[in-house]
Length: 189
Image (cartoon, rainbow, N blue to C red):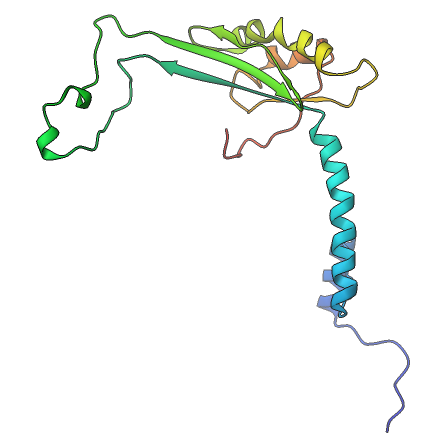
């Protein structure tokens, strides 16, 4: 039986460069745990830590979004599934109104355990119009939803152009409203 060889292992240059680059980005190499019990224990411990952290963080997020509802004269096409024998039945037709059926646009926000007011608006929305929509509702919601000692809350909105306009961003900054960074390429934007 041979005695184990002690000393340094020769590492090829390309591997050294790879390791150095990873370390510069704060990524260190670790040996993979081979004992499944140890691995399971580590995973459960990390999960418990993460759950506590994320629940605390998500409780401090103010979510907001807008929606547009049309009544009659919808802009998109409407399809119906029917039998051939039901072709002339009234439930297969969409009623039309000459001057449009009307529409409503709404904005709302919510946080963990609290719902904000439903704000209605009409017309196209740019930065100034968006600020007009949220200027009364958002600050009062923040005041009512969070303790005055809680300064960890953040406002989340999708990255629609009115939300990230200079006018809107300046208003949010002037009011001391912290905005959660949301990637532009998100599925929601």
